[in-house]
Image 1 (cartoon, rainbow, N blue to C red):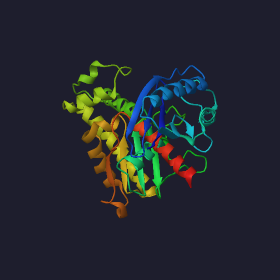
Image 2 (cartoon, one colour; image 1 turned 120 degrees about the horizontal axis):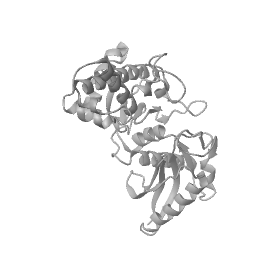
Image 3 (cartoon, one colour; image 1 turned 90 degrees about the vertical axis):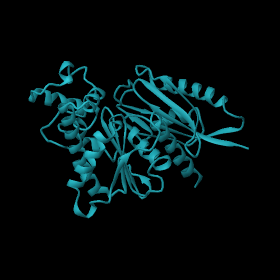
Image 4 (cartoon, rainbow, N blue to C red; image 1 turned 60 degrees about the horizontal axis):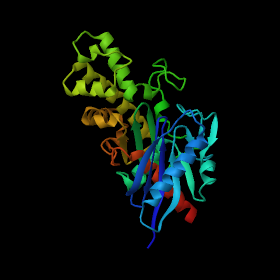
Length: 323
């Protein structure tokens, strides 16, 4: 009897993770390797294919691979490309799907990590059975994936859902994208640290955070200080939650989801962030939506949510090809 799985790949600037995942989201085998961002993309693809072959060989006989899904920064689903990726020395545009298709005659697709997370939530996580959902990834930046009518929204150019680059303050913080005042400069691990540092400069209360420099301060340290009752850290979380709640209320007005799922490192702060964000979202919601939108943490397993998202993309492509 044949077992069928897909390859889910999550490419980061430092580490690339991959797994063989079955239809129910079960991980049959997984591994990581160093990305070596300074090397051309085709070298990474060669190394990945060799590592996948080793992983595949360890599975029971007759286990077949049906498709490949890839999550990567600045990826375009329609073109199969990674374009001007941060932290990867790949140039302006690399057709990663074509590189994999040279080695595997399988349905293959790529998207950005936030879109992959949304697909993972839809297929394997808390959004199963939902037609409309929003997934927000809170890490170094803020990514988002929008599910509409049970399908991921890509938009005309393939880049719909960039909520992290909607504007909070037109003359606000400088963003790596070149704009000012982007949401991710306030609501992200980096944004939380920037808020804490601003409060430390404005306020005089004692805080363990005063012993840390801006360049070394981490969101985990702010979290630990907040758990210890530090007023500066607690206010930093409250400010972050208020901005997040306000912008989620805007997103609800545009997309009317059944639920919003938060994932990523900052979402691990739990009730320090999610409960006040839920309260502020309700405050800013258009009356028709009040009390109808769930806001909760991702239900994908911590640690391999990105890989499961990429695998969900692969299963989507397998199903599309079979139609």
